[in-house]
Image 1: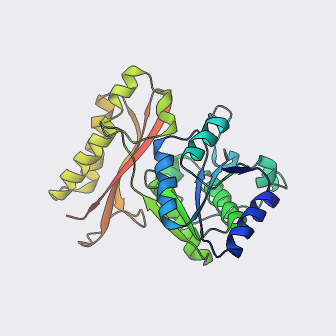
Image 2: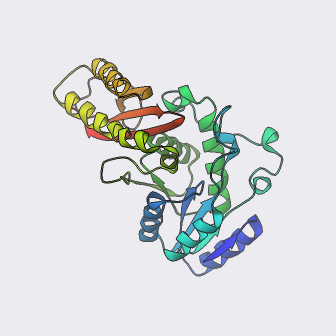
Image 3: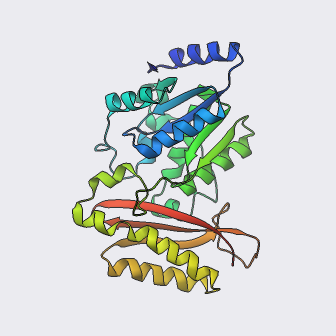
Length: 283
C-alpha cells in the first residue's frame, strides 16, 4: 500500500488508475482506525477496484472545548491495518495541504437546514467543518464512490445532500453500524471509557431498541423521547438528546405512515460523548 501526503502525489496515482479505466472508492476517516473503519474499506472494495482511505484529523469540525488537540493520532498503526486489508492508497494530508490559505481564511461549505438540529444544535459549526473537508476530499480524490458509516447518521445525510445539491458525480454508500456483542457501537471514543462506564454504555443501544418498540405500539414520539432521556439519566448518563425523526430529513414525523424513521441518541458518560441511532419503519 502506498501512502501520500501531498496533492500532487495523490493526483498522480489517481490519474494512472483512471487511464486504466479503473473506478475509485474513497473512505474518509480521522484515523485511529478500528474494526468499524476496516468494514468501510471492505465495503469500498466491493464498489470499485481501487480504494483510497484518507486519514486527516480535521480541525474545523471541532468546537471550543472539544478534543482536537488530544484526538489520537496513530498513523503507523493505521497504515498497518489498511495494508493488511490490501487498501490501495492512504492519503494522509497535512493541515497545510487541506487548508492552503489557513483555517481562518478557508472557503467554507454550508449545508442549510439539516445541519441545524440534533448534533448541529449541540455542536454549532461542526457540520460546516464536515461539509468543507468532505467537499475538499471529493475534489482532490474525485472518487466514483465514497463510503460512510451509518453510526454518524446525520453526517451521512449532510454528505448526501451536499452531493445532490452540487450535482457531484459520485455515489454515497452507507454501511450499517458495526457493534460490539453487547450492542455498543464501535467508536474511537470508546477507548476513553473506564470499566464502569463501559459496562453502562450498551444502555444507549438498548434504549434505542426500546424507543423503536414503543413507537411501533403507537405511542406519542415526544413522550417516548422524554422517557428515554429519563431512562438514561437514571443510569448515570447525561443525554444531549433522545429523538425520533424522519430518517432522511431529520424533521419530526408528521403522521406519514410510509416514512422511514430513526431513533437517535447523544449522551455523555463522564467526559466521553457517544452517539448512536436505529432506523425503523413507521408504525
